[in-house]
Image (cartoon, rainbow, N blue to C red; front, top):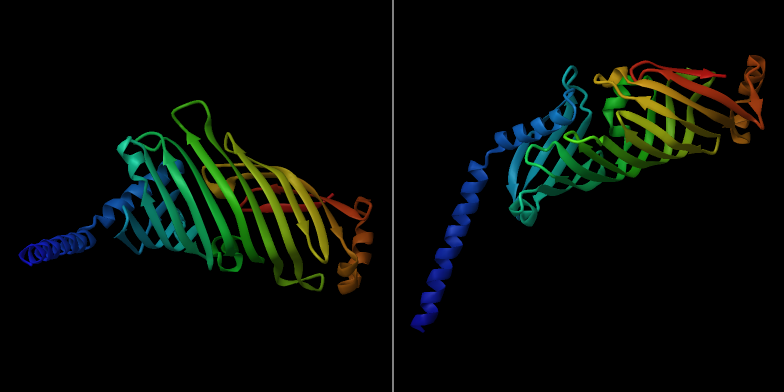
Length: 296
């Protein structure tokens, strides 16, 4: 009986110490230091970006939770380039013991889910690999492009992005992405040739990053009114709005489109643009901040 009582006593002490440690860890957690660490890491990747969060707290096991974390452009903090509702970041303990800075992340943003990992090969983060997976991201809630683009695109984004940076070596920045838009729609700010919107339905894109150049290997639109395909590249600039565009593609209005907008057929005929099997050829040049669309 005395032995059992003694065990209960030690168990009580142990639980008390654990509880006090967790409370102290919660209230003494260096949130500002963590925020500055993340901000510095992002600025090393691209000096044009910054990071801040509403709240950062420790999270069990071996991690922390970010609430209201956002990545922004230094010259224009609002709207944010990316805004996460919440993000759980878990440190990989065994990798940390081996001297590698690796962690997994899982969170929510724009009514969708995000998961992925980050694996740094050196303490300064100059060489790292990362991967993000997006599920059901609501594009209508993403304010950053809407603030710079006069029309609005709605739909849900799914896809994967892989990115690695070897700044210390010859490889430089590399990455690839596969993104899919489902149930999409392009809504015009003001009626265009009598149209208020165009059904995008599904868009499938494959991108590759190398030497600060994003190559569009595949970009296909399948809608009930329009079909389209596009290839080309985006030459990135330190000021993202000045990144150069060089893309060409085909646009094919379908029977449903002409049925809904009968005046468009005559308008396109009068423009005497090049047509092949019902497809029109187009180009997109200029910059991300001021794109120029032109039918060939």
